[in-house]
Length: 94
Image (tube, rainbow, N blue to C red; front, side, top):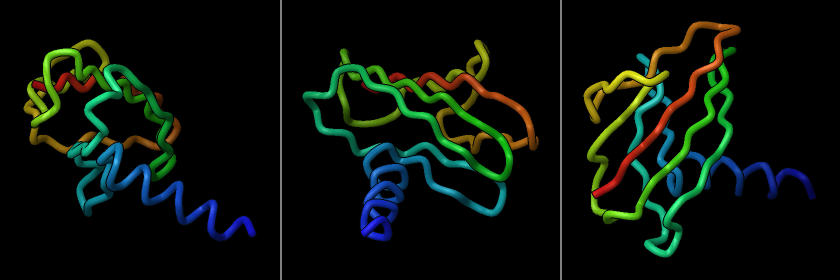
């Protein structure tokens, strides 16, 4: 039923796309298939919405750049979450 689909979606978001909920916000730690050169996903989290795009054209080992609404932030930084806000996130892998 839908329970399985929902569970699969959560696994995809948390582990494949690597958008993991923490106490302070979303952490980005993707484990995408290397052949997925570019992809994007929409993620809801604590009332905020994120459009997260991934660029693996230069590699897939780790997050090299994390860009939040056009501003570079630390790749290890968690994403903020203001309810009702929309965030554009770019993840560049190397």
